[in-house]
Image (tube, rainbow, N blue to C red; front, side, top):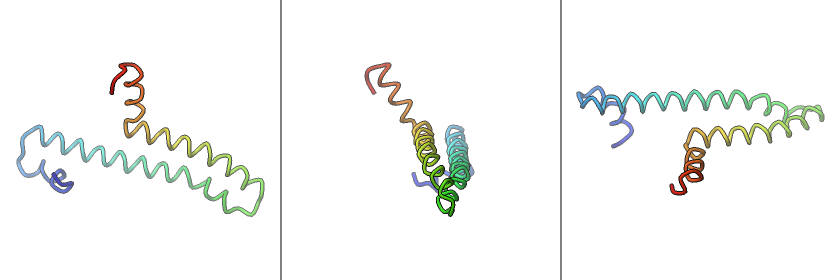
Length: 95
């Protein structure tokens, strides 16, 4: 099923399950888009520090970039389900 079909299927008279799946798919797309915008906005001050002429501000930007990169990686792992998979493997012993 293509992405367009998944978006338009709720409006073509599909079954109730297909309508719910379409709504959830669109909702997830909105949530991921909004979170990507928030992450981009949070990275702006760090990026501005890299282009500063002040050495202290540039040094602080490097240390903040490391922390922001780690935080972004953890967030992406949480959203994609990697963290759930790792903890599930640790607890259950199987994927």
